[in-house]
Length: 318
Image 1 (cartoon, one colour):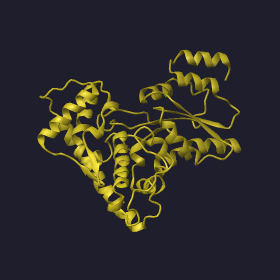
Image 2: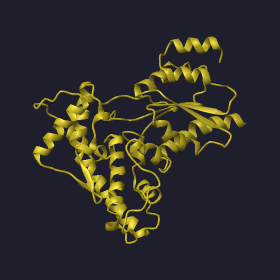
Image 3: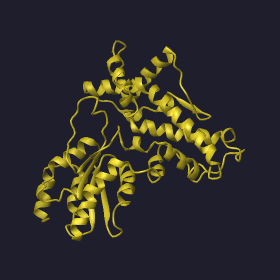
Image 4: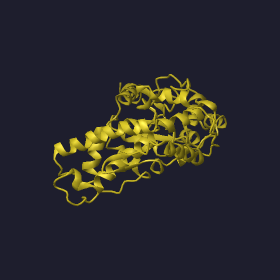
């Protein structure tokens, strides 16, 4: 791509990652390219993608900032200059299915199956690997680990249900176009996990307190008269409440569940009177890095990578 064309394309979009992509794009290098939403997303996607690429190929991923920025780049790119199978876009489904928000339906745009990519990695299998590989329970029996994972799944269902009122309010805000800072809502301020069990105060007073908390944290004025019953009903549909709780909140549950099991080791494992030494400390800040390479690649993402990056590389080999 000539420098004149690079500059001309850059003028149409003020997103820094797009400029960097244009400057680095090479027709000859064995590199495929992709745009993701946040700065943590490359950690998830790179490991998944590299699993399918030949050893002599690389992937460069560019965080655009948010979903709107990713989709803006997708719309602004001059597709006469770039092979579509070589440049892909990875975005969260978010609550789009519940608010009739249309996302691009193109073969080089990957939309997560659930709210975000984090939702797809919070699974029984990931829990098992985290407990044995990170939290130090490598000598626990398979039966013991199975029982803990059974409890993980049962409590996950309870967590989804407990999150319905919070997610209903978020859905209400999204539907009304209200700006809300969801990152400042700390789930640990509303619920806790002790001995591998989710602790939820279901009293009306506690529910009211949680409603006030999420409004204050998100920077949204609380209105007692607001009726979210319709939005709660949407979430109570089986396919919704299990799929559309915000991914970072579900990730909190996985991390805190494993932490609580570690703290109560003797309750779950005969061989561990004391908690085993952890390989690495896990927190909300580094959970993406620690968990990303221990999760199974979602089938939809496998298919997407095969039909885009892998198909492009195969074409170049012919």
